Amino acid sequence: MKKYVFIICGFLLFNFTSCNNWLDVELDNRVEDSKLFNSAEGFEEALAGVYSSMSKSVMYGQYLTMQYIDALAQYYTNVNSSYEDWVDYDYEISSSVSIISSMWSNFYSNIAQINCILEWADENASVLSETERNQIRGEALGLRAYLHFDLYRLFAPDVKRAPNTDGIPYNKEFNVSVPPMYTTEETIQLVINDLLEAEQCLQNDPINDVVPYEFRTTTDQGEVIDAAAKNEADKYIARINLYGVKAMLARAYQARGEYNKAIEKAKEVIDCGKFRLLEFNSVDQSEALTDLTFSDEHIFALRNNTLNDNAQALFQDNATSTGATELTRLPFANVSTLYQSNNDDVRYSKWFNLGSFVKFLPDSTNVFPQKMPMIKLSEMYLLIAECCYNTDPTMALEYINTLRDHRIRSNVHWTYLTKDYIYEEMRREYPGEGQMWYVYKRNFLDIPGGLTGTITVTEDMFTFPLPDNEIEYGHR
Image (tube, rainbow, N blue to C red; front, side, top):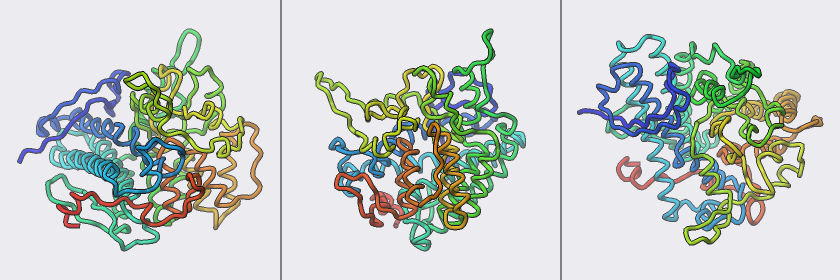
């Protein structure tokens, strides 16, 4: 049987030979694998399809970040009627069932493409140098782990509370057979296995030879940050790289409660010197030159040239086809309370404008490309603070104060710390990125910010139901 893979050309090939407007090219083709995987470029194009697909609005460009997942985290209040069932955690209504089913399908569609790449990297290994094969396999394995981990976070109970309960099907092969269902503990171990193998494959990742945030374009007036410089940096960041894999290992170990291992991996990312926390001069610029998403902190991010359109539709008043005005679909709740009305906190002063969320609505995209952060350096600081809170509160305090030094001008250090302080800092850090709901799930926390006040959690709130087709045809 011939196998085919759907390619969406648009991602910069990892040998870094493409032109600077690589993400602006979106050419859809179906290419027979035997031809596609006859060269290194074919493998790179296949990976391009995965990155581009993951960046779409039905995945991390909207659904899995600023839209539905952040609605579950109760960031929004007085939402448009389309989202009332989400803030009420009603996953059984037909519209929610349809969206959840599409999420499931999109995850496994991308995983199937990744497995196709991995299969052909074995079958056609002779067309690749050892370096090329390791890079391709490392990225593919890292992405497979990333997608399965988020499937676990959406569709399975928390592994610490229910290690022997059904998790998700972990698909490791490209074929038509139904992958087996694994327990939550087995699922996390499979994620870690893929990440450890990816880490070995990516030992010679090109990011080792550069510091992405230092890229500048040399002009007659000196060195400047411009679109060319950011495109050059994104050759290393807008894909899963060695340190993205290490950061994912930190996430996975934290999920399982292996906090020492999580801290070790997070420190490797922090100490590598490839990323840096926000410097205030990057936001003390004209609006057109303000780095709203703090791109120097991006360990892995997905470029999406419609991200501001997606944000505009969700967070701004918009004219309808009849000329009427549709009010903001997802207005933020209690922004001033969340940030304690502190204009010295650049997240408050830069991400919000009179209460409207503008983190993904830059004045111009000429310099800073539109990107959804998938893993940021700040998360590693927060992860360490959470993981060592009980065993080394001094270290927890040090890491969270360091992060706040790069968020709040003239920051006055906290002299003591509580778990609630850490969670509140996470809530200030993650709007629009789809991470906060997972924090509440991982710690089984009541959720602040609902229309009726704090929401008392239940297991059902944190676990999406399997799609009907998966139950029927997967015999679950």
